[in-house]
Image 1: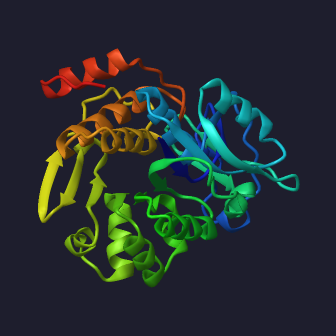
Image 2: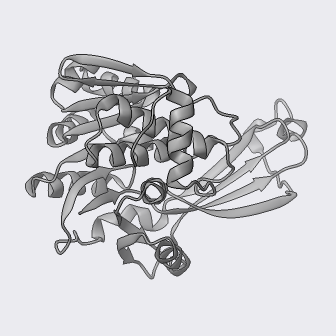
Length: 310
């Protein structure tokens, strides 16, 4: 059975600037900036939350099914999915581009990012894959209408799903968040996103968790916490030589989905999720890391002192 992954599909354009942005910012003149930075190199990679999660889950041997939207330039991404054995239920739009992220980083690590959602704003036009047997789903950051629609579609079909509000948090008011939490079986968020959720809904973390099978909160290099059945479990992160954190949360979610669909307990699931996140942070690019199941199991054992069957 498949795991349905709903969310953004995007191209990541990463540019490197060999000087400091600050050298070109003149105090007192910031209200009429007109700058052009000539960069040293550019890397175009594959990104988007849904695609990143699917990449991680597939690496573990899972069966992801990505639902979302691409634009006129999306054929390349569709071929890429096929090359990696990832099934899709995509809508291709001919009057817009696939979502694009352009990030320029200077020698200090400062970044300037521009994001164009493009086709993502019409992800809700992708029809639900009625012909597929789905055992679990995740509704990740996407167009607002798509996130609401997928949550309702899954609830109506009684398909358990994880609500992953991510960068979509500012799109929703408290009542809208409450609706999706009510429909969901699980929720996952970074500590910052969880704070936004509690502020918007007026609910505490424990109150949110009480309406779910589990609420998972990630803390970056400090690990993650799961609230379930009135209990709290903290799991430390895997120590890593961090190179690029972009996409680490999505890699983590791939491990989370695998654990939930393979009968692991919460400690094993969060540990595996952390291992997948660690592979990602040690490599530049959201989908540039690679690991065999043997390498994943070995890293798990080294980090946590016990074996895991994948």
